[in-house]
Image (cartoon, rainbow, N blue to C red; front, top):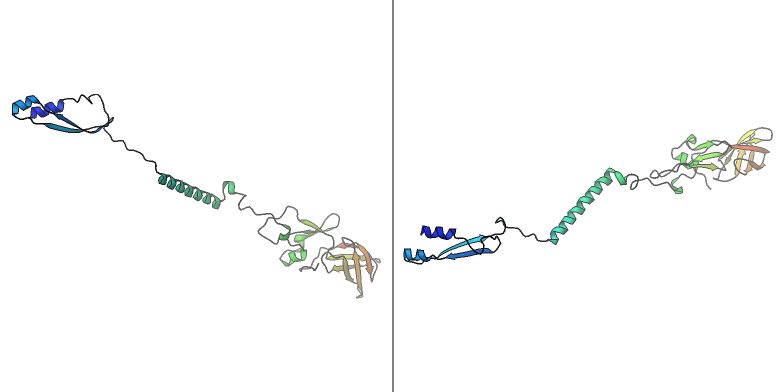
Length: 229
């Protein structure tokens, strides 16, 4: 019996001797007549074995999965959004000077009158000055701290609030304008007499009542209160 098994196991398969293909389980049945005569029976020995492709390893089959693709895309988008959020919070690269840039101030973002600016903490020396032509300049300051002021915000005040007027005899009196942008001034002489003065621009008198006013110049002076227009 041992000789029969050895003979069967050493007998090559003519169909697959020089081939290696994946055919699944193969049953090889061999009946040896000589063995039948020797042992008085006709035993049948069956061998089952796997004929595999190549190096007898099983090759996995890859399957396309739309669910996996969708999950991968969502995860990638979440990562990108997280990175963009981090860059935005750190204010780096393209976000510098764009998203959080302070907008320029509009006209309504400034104190339109010197008196209002002084009322809100600015001083006369901060906002008022005289140019080389003797005109009163108002350096506008923003009332909105969330905007960026323009480069040059100097405005010529054509009708200053206070003017120093010179009378015909050389006497100087101070006249005050009670309306913003108005051209009518009131002055009081040393004897208590009131003088009404009308000007063109920059304190230049055109008419006066109560005294003969011949000239005038702006004063660096302004009350800490808005004037009526």
